[in-house]
Image 1 (cartoon, rainbow, N blue to C red):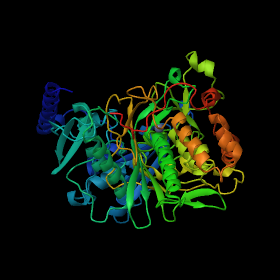
Image 2: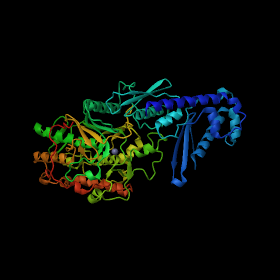
Image 3: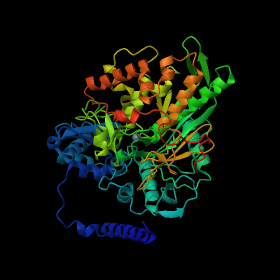
Image 4: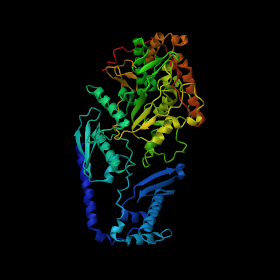
Length: 616
Ligand SMILES: [Zn+2]
């Protein structure tokens, strides 16, 4: 939005206030007009202001049942009816009866008419009427944008814009002062910054307004005893700004993710840092393992962690002791594991796409943390990201994706991040190849910035398939990570068009990689160190170095798919998990065409240099 438009909006706001004033002044003449019929809500409004409603709807589209509730005077009033309006009126009527019974001694309010109740309440002295503190107006719902809703909430606010020098993709700040408190929004455009600040103001006044946008305000600092979640999120954000300080690459990201390693001596360190919201388009799928298929930030974080683990194994082997400060080797199991007390925490600035996220966005009116409709059929389903599209779709009715189908223009489907994280809680985060060298490595904690709903997160990442799991192979289990949210979550940065470039960094790299999410290749067209081919190269060289501890056929596996399939326990656990989803009617796990895994090293094309990712 340009400044002209902003001035226009401000004038419009001032006009509205003037109109309101003049209608107040003409109150006397207004009395001559026929008065509108009284309703429970109009009586309630007159006495106590607008109730702050929570509304949900259930049932098939042609016969929805609306449930409306609100808190008043320390009690919840709730009603269900075929329309939201009817339910709101009923709930308001209940509240009026309740207040009347409390405020008027001896009043038998249950069977009273609205007329009788309102006379009773309106006859009380003004001080009695105002016994309950005025409530803030109902959260405006008539406009989809936070700025529009804020305008309806308070049309007198002034938005002040300035350019931003923060190195996080934001180019503007927008500040608003409401009731003596100043809020600051940021964004890649003035519109985005305004959108951000409006979200913050609405969040401050309406606890049920989703914190889906960046709610950073520089005037708030972390307390002296930050929670684990605060510590993790601020470390990741700090790492992002360190990595991009001198970058010339424009990175307008929406989703930021990182993995933080916690060590026994209370030391925390960021070991992966990634951004991104894109998946590869079908015509860029590689037969040589060169392309990175899924550049959603949290999925790249998983690939970066694998890079990190390969680097740690190399270091441990080079030490001669088969151990370092992060890994140790068990000569009986012939496997590595993390040193005692080392824990992994995944951070994502917003809930992962798919099952963990979709209902938090839908249930904007319901309370955070709980799922008001946990038994709906839509809960827990496998969902897929669509090539060149936003959001996710249910996997029902689809089974196999074929190479020729995709190359002939069928849209490529990729399992959602919620589903992939769900798999990590059974299979571990290390993947099939590293399962030759490690027992499964599970995440200890997941910290989510915004769109945080514990009920949805728990269901999406393990709860939904638990009843369908058969006994798992030894050393595999269903992992239940702890979930946490920072006290001042920084969410998706509201930008109109996110860049297709993802940043990816692993501890040990001098520079981050910049990957084009749509092609899966680095911006300079080289192969990413997160590609299958590159990681397979690492796998092969380590398998050779560990020849005394790794089965001969694994060392000899030339094809990527063979090395993966030889990870027997991992594959069995995977089949078990996919069956659990199918058995529970939660959909089919859709795989990419197997052709993309039928490659061996050195077939064609150069592998990336060992230059520590100097890709800028
Ligand atoms: Zn995602």
